[in-house]
Length: 197
Image (cartoon, rainbow, N blue to C red; front, side):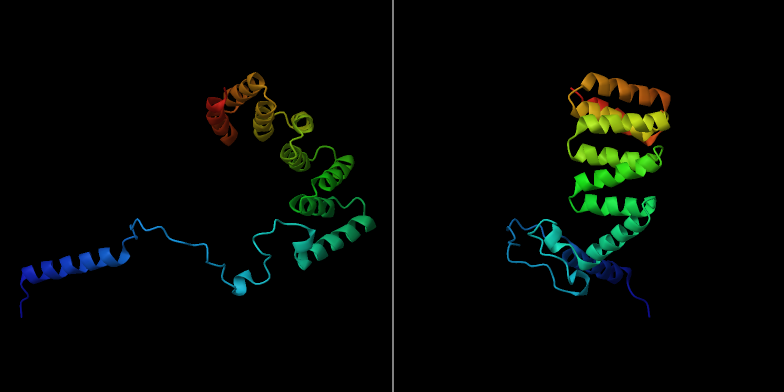
């Protein structure tokens, strides 16, 4: 039994049209109202704080508070435990207690002043706090430890730009591009130089 080619074309055409109708996005101009929608209350979201409230001590999960207490005890028992100090500082920072986090990062640096990871974290904290002078001093500390740190060089330019010193930012970024043209930070510097006024 032979099926005519015409019937196959018609069936394929009907199938394609049906697929387009079923799977095409809704392009109606009618504005949808999502204001009455709520986040599903399922296993994945169970115990999450309401989205209307910013993170604060009152809505931090018990597990995070317990972890912080545990780390604090470890630090008190062993004041040279820089790993616990770092974790504690990160939690403080995430909990909007940046000033306390700075203290712990500085304690780590009294134990080992060459810790680039800690100096970088401290730079970002100062930058987020809009303490650009402290951020700049910290980046300069990184560059004393590692003068070839492309991340620190890029950040020095970003801090200078945020302080309003676009000439310095441009110079730092051009030097970065010239010395380390293949680095990711050089790519970023190229795009940011274009945005300087």
